[in-house]
Image (cartoon, rainbow over all chains, first blue to last red; front, side, top):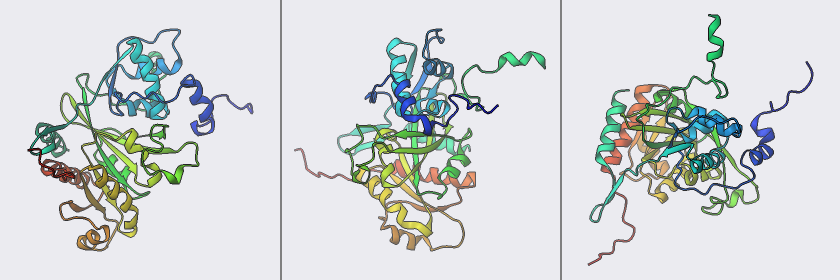
Length: 128
Length: 210
């Protein structure tokens, strides 16, 4: 009972090695298209040869789920999740629904928020 | 109930997730920014439809040097923890609420995660007003519209005094709240949305094209 269990240390203690392994040593995904609240949806089931983090993501994405939610569920930093998601996007295993910019711009008035978006947000808040 | 054992999720951590509708396609962001212990997590939790989640982000190469990060130049990585909740708006839209630390060394979160936010709430503790100066300065610099909410822990200075202490211009809404109360936190967010509807970014280059 005194044997120290493997892989049970908190993320902080093992972060450098683990993050290196998880991402295959790659740096930041540099994919500006994948926003922190892009909603990710699985398009296929996890495969038997799949990296475990990829399989975990696919299981989480049965329903749309934001990038930051995947990060919280898997206890991985957001930028690491972005890299993993880029792999899955490349193979078509997931698709992403990106945020639509809420600003419209007119030459005279400059950028302003889309009135319908603001109205719907207001109604949702008033329902709380 | 002996037959339920195999129904347990295989790998995903069991955190009682409350999934989005399958039609959800457009996520919006509002950031609640403030110092430690000012009530950001409390505010997120009081209005979120799910139990707030926490996660962290590490500063990537791309963010280093983008802003004034001289304070962290010598550190190899900076990690910032933050939490968030969400409110479903309609069949396609969902609003994410982030609670984020306002200190200088954590501002890379704005570059990496919070771009495109509708706006921000600066949550202020009147005993530590100075902790809000940096956040307000940055938001003005990024032209992110914001309101300022004083989380009341007890008697304190009136709002005019707070406005003066924050050197806040008259067009920035300033209100009191009790972040523990859902209606109060909701009213802060409603004030922000009203502000967004009125907001026009200041024109830095007032040149006429013709």
